[in-house]
Image (tube, rainbow, N blue to C red; front, top):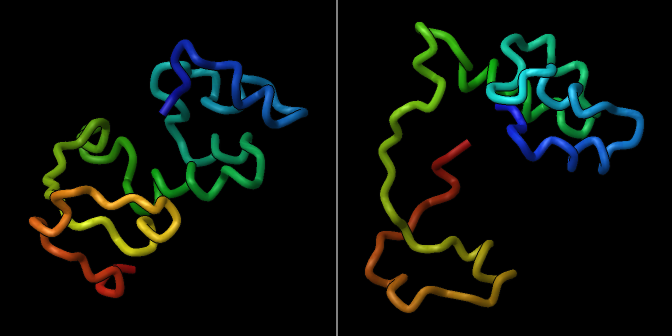
Length: 103
């Protein structure tokens, strides 16, 4: 979705790519078409393509650009607390989530 003023990190990390490759030379918004994802390093392309394939970036009069999202707090999954060794003190107050219920 564009790099904004912080546009030098990706090009420094991925040799052989220019900073414009990482946002299709559109600093505040990024690539407007899926084909722009082809400019990225292979390791980053699937994340870019997700915006068009699943998220449907800029479809419906641009309503996917900064969409409204409903969310709720849940208990931290064991997969995270096992590696962080950290569990919020109030974690027990929130519902557990069944990760197997999601794709």
